[in-house]
Length: 109
Length: 112
Image 1 (tube, rainbow over the protein chains, first blue to last red):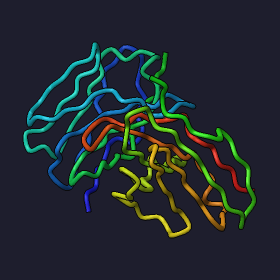
Image 2: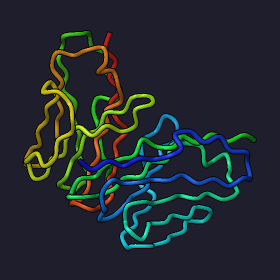
Image 3: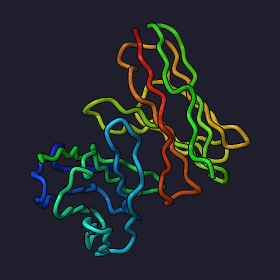
C-alpha cells in the first residue's frame, strides 16, 4: 500500500538558521499537503501542491513538489521561535490521504 | 463557520471498558476521518467516512469502529479498552476527496 516517509524525525535548529524536511512516497501522488502542529495543538493545514515540479512560498517557507510527484520538501529560512512544532506531509493517492511521521522542530535561541 | 468540534476533550477509562467519541464536522463537509496520535507514532489513520459510508480503513483491530450520521456527524467507538489505546484521537473533516483536512482539538483518552 501507499507509504509516505518523512525525514528527519527531529530537527534542532539555531535561531536564524535554515533547515529542510523531506517527504517521499512509494507511489505517485495526486497532491501533497503540509500541516503544522504546535505543541499541545492540532494539525493545521499550511499548503497543498498539485502540479509536477510546483513550488510555492509562504513568507520564509518554501514548498516543492517533485517532478515525478513522489517527493516533496519544506524549506524554512531564518528559523524563528515561532517555527517550533511538528511538520507533517500528507500524500493523496487513490483517494486516500497518508501522513508522514512528521518532523519535530525545536529552536535554540 | 464553526470549526470541527470533538467531545469530550478528555476522558479517563479503565481497561476492559468501552468508549464513544463524537465529532461534528465543519458545516458542508461530508468527509470525516479519524486518527490516533501517540508520542513518536505520528498520525495513525483509523478510518474515513463519506456520506455515511466507510470509504477507507487503517490497520487497527476490530475493537475500533465508527459510523457517520446523515448530518455528517461521526462517532468512533473503542471496545474492550487496553492500556495501549491511551492516545489523542483526532477527527478531521473536508468537503471531498483531495481537499485539505480540518482538524478538531481532539479527545485525549487515558486508560488506567
